Image 1 (cartoon, one colour):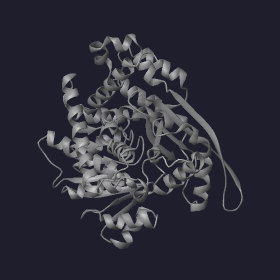
Image 2: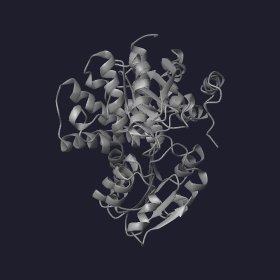
Image 3: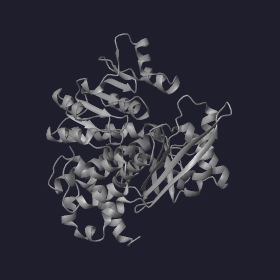
Image 4: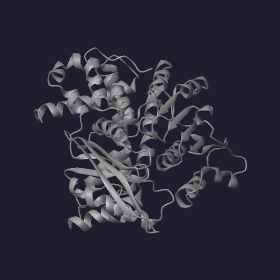
Length: 449
């Protein structure tokens, strides 16, 4: 059950429901932020007078368009695409593109709304936006994906620019898709505008650590939460949901810091290997062969695969949900707490339901929400933009060090803000309030626009 809102905030939320019917993920994301802002309005009543919250909840621009494309057999398909340019108070709109059948306006708005505060937490000059399409890249040839990306960009290019809106990848959009999208943008505009896309290939303007950044950043944040408890990751058992980009590199960094990851998953089921997940096998199966995680047991006979199983039933010290929204519910959270889990950090966007969050907070477990814990990806995208603007190229080690510093600073700011507003250890309040105040002050300074 979601927490009750402050009496000043309830009418604002009701207006959001009225103006955005049926967009349940967006409603959830807005409620999760609003329920933490009551004390902020007491301390800064000018934000209420100038209706900053109402303005933040309404995107500056919402773009919806059709994407016609032809498959290898000559059949014509029509998909729908979106770009929600949510808030540019701190810089150009920044946020990924998601290609998945579940994509509709409500999901893009939820992701874009989260992105506002996540991007603010990085301390870098980037606003919040998000985009995507209900196109499913699974099973499609490279040529089909290229044709789809070129058709999408033929419309979207007019809304982008390194000082306007800078997309990146997300679910279903990796280096291949970014290449096709950027190539069409370059072709249409006749400009090699490197800073208009992030997640580019290393050989043509990309950042050395961007692929690893979200997963690495989540683990850096986890390490800081554990330090605040007087502990470290060394020797801890960890479970990581998913087996895509974020999960793979969360596993990698957790291993590097001395933890043992014993389980991961995909949409078919869960994989448990008590001796520790062999990451090289997972990378080969997922990144090269593009097979299901169940294939892992062909190599490691002592591992077990449970079709349709619950990852959260595996006893662990640390849980890292790195797959998708609302994958960890109240029952799952209860199981994790009962099994002795002491820390949860979100590598995905809003993977824990409100009921799950409440259980974690009541149990005094260290819970890092996605807008703080997975901000490493967009932070490194902003670093890629810096490299592009200066026509420079940074080493992996230098970029990773910058990433670690940013994640340590995000943790510090969230931790201190939570204490300032009377909720020590509550990273949800810390993240929401820190991000909101930064954006609100910028909006206030720029006047009513």
